[in-house]
Length: 426
Ligand code: IMP
Image 1 (cartoon, rainbow, N blue to C red):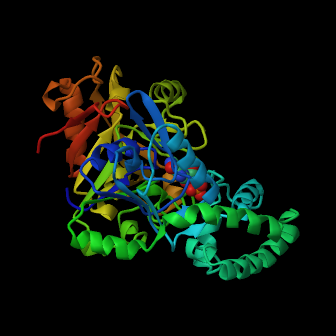
Image 2: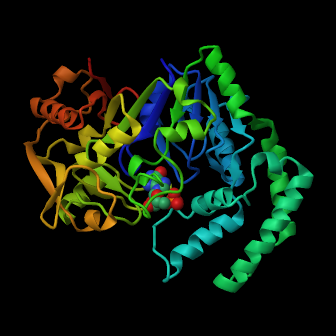
Image 3: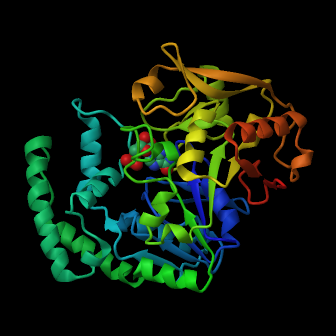
């Protein structure tokens, strides 16, 4: 296995957790490079469901080194709870987890401001997960964030937290009519976290540089999806990090020349949580049907996901900005039994046809999808393990997607268990 980056090609929730779990078997090191506990990667092992928010999904394969890179924003409380829960369920974290000392930390004021901003009538509602992700990244770029390395130096931490709270508390009181935060409380709470987290802290870039020299196999685990990328997504209805393949380098300190392969994960249809345009959304009846069949409820917030037909314009965008080598197609089984299946190949907006993903949110909000219609397949696919054994129309659907995207689909997932995966021969 080469050094591989795995990214979502849609609006997140593509089923990356399962594919990462499958690929992790051949990897030595699995690294998260962006996002935070807004992610919820679901993996089912022997009928047991695990939902991972911060720790790389590779942790479910024994003995792998799991890294949280500098590009991730870490909520120490959530991290410690996740470690505890995994250990309770028999997953040994031991020395396998490492966290970049340059990763920025989420503080209580980030979470509160995330929610307060969302509830203000004068601001665009993004539909965030409310985990403080955006405000933490904003502080990072604004150069007033607090990193793990800062927390671990008592003097630096005290100074930085004091400075941060002077400004934040003024803002909370004056703009949001919120009482603000006590320095003493946060200081005490975070020093207690520091004691528990210190052992995981390390220099991510140096570690990965040596690992690459030793020819270790690294899997870079992306969170969210391409059209939630802060640069390439449906801005402002995006998350605050670079979810695309380039983010793997920035978020870990690995050079682009050390990346060998990029795999995109695409759901056989499309889903979205949070606000923002969604051109291929199903009408109500089909939406309910697919939502329940596909269990399309947010793994982090439990919010119902909007569901729609496969949007090839979106995934072609992902092919371009990630330069995908292959695609893993997930949840094909959810389409079993549909009489007709549509694929969106372009958008029509005010008489103009768009085959390339438009940057203007107005176009996405007001466009009419251009669909191709394909016959469905009545039989269940969830126990099929070979591509040739899939129903003819399912094979045709997959091959049509490959043609539209101009990328090979190398894996097809037909259920949540590890074994429910079809490797498609080249
Ligand atoms: P934030 O990342 O919490 O700031 O939320 C920004 C947008 O990204 C919202 O629309 C969220 O619903 C969406 N989002 C964040 N994380 C995920 C994810 O893991 N899957 C799907 N959508 C996500």
